[in-house]
Each structure stands twice: as structure tokens, then as C-alpha cells.
Amino acid sequence: MSGGAGSLDPNVAPVPRTRRGRPRGTGILIAALSTLVVVGVLGYLIVNSAGWPVLQSNFFDAATFFDTLPKIVKAFALNVQIFLVTEVMVLVFALVLAVMRSLPGPAFFPARFFAIAYIDVFRGLPSVMVVYLLALGIPALQLPGVTDDVFFWGIVTLTLIWSAYVAEVYRSGIESVHASQDAAARSLGLSRAQSLRYVVLPQAVRRVIPALLNDFIGLQKDSALVGFLGPIEAFKRAQIETDATFSFTPYIAAAVVFLAITIPLTRYVDWLIARNRRQRMAGAT
Image: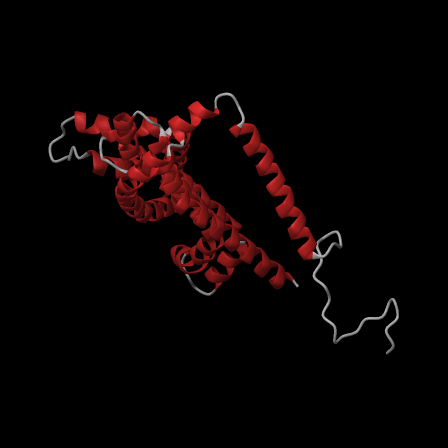
């Protein structure tokens, strides 16, 4: 077939275009240029402001940054340890809470009431307040057989706080599984508990993995709250270095360390969400 204005040649690959019909490469170029312009203008205004020299010396001193960065990176290992231990505990305890809240029937009302009350309380209180109340308050009771290790109580406190948030994520996944899935499992002879374990929960957990990872990014940041109790993690080390150098630059170094972890995790979560969206659209067609 001769190539007219409206003809389509199957041997020629179409040019990728954006939603408005513009070639994709042109759109990327325009986005990059506009970003550079905005960042350049903001940088020019900041650098040429009257208070920039004072801000630079207090927050962006290069010598202080590179001198304190290795110490903060070393202390960040404690944040990683806190995060890994707490994450495992949160995954288990939050799932128990979500299942308790999802139990039907009047016989399970006490379990539902406890789960709802727990989630409402720990989601409603500021995290730093809970850290002080539990991690410092419980050891002050001097109960026999109860440890007063603030590191232990810091992990327990973070587990209690984040289990309330993650339980709601689990519950949204459980409720997203259609009731017909449970009915089909029951018709095959499975008990309610077996249906929940083998049919509902596997689907629910798979659907909320991106949301779970998003919450764990927040948990990684909240690991700095343990530093208020005394253990020297990254934020506490930055505070010590700030007191020693009379400069706020160590806080910037700590922020860079946290961002080096959280930004890749955030992009990974975005990729998972986009992949799940594509899979749902492919399954719907």
C-alpha cells in the first residue's frame, strides 16, 4: 500500500508520544529544562539573600560536614538494627490486630473492641510522647523481672506505635478481598479460620505490600526517636557533634544519611505501585 497521509505502515514502529501527542523525548527535555530553571532561580535567590553567609556557616560548613559524616554513618548502624528488629515485630503484631478487628459476630466483640481502642489510642498520640511515657515510665515502676533497658523499651514503643498504623493497612487488604472468596472456600469444606489463613490473608497481604513498604519508610525515620532515651544513633550523634562544633552542619549530615536510605525505598515503592497498576489493567482487559 502506498504511503498516504493517513496510511499506516506495519513495518514502521510508531513514535512514542505523550498524552497530548507530543513526542516523549521532547516532553522529557521540556521537563528537565523547566526544572533547571526553577532550581536555578531558587538557588540564585537563596545564595544572594542577605542572611546566606550566616546560614552557610551554620548549616553548610564543608569541613564540619565531612568530618562528622563518618561518625554519623557509624551511628546509623544502630538505626538499622532498631528498624530491622521493630519491622519483624510490627508485621506480626499488626496482623494479629487486623485479624482481631475483622472477626465477625457478637462473640468476638471484645476482640474487636480491644483492637479498635488500641489502634485509635496509638494512632492519636504523638510518637515522641509515647516514647517518653512508656520507655521512661515503665522502668520507673521498678517492677520485678522487668528490664529497665531503654533500648529495649524504645523498640517496644516503636512496635506499639507502628503496629497501629500497619494494622489498618492489613485491614484494608482484608476488606479488599471479595466475600465470594471466603464463601467459595467455605463451600469447599474449609473452616472460617482456614479460609482466613489460606485464602483471604495471602491475597490481602499481597495487595498491600506497597503500602506496607511506605509505612516502613516512616518507621525507619522514627528510629531516631530512640535517641531521645540515650542510645547514640545517627540523630543523637549529630546532636553531640553539633554541641561540640557549635555548628548545625552535623544535622545536615544526618539528614543526608537518612535520605540516602529513604529516597531509594520511596522510588521502589512507586515502582511497585505502578507495576501493580499495570498488572490490574492487564488482568481487566
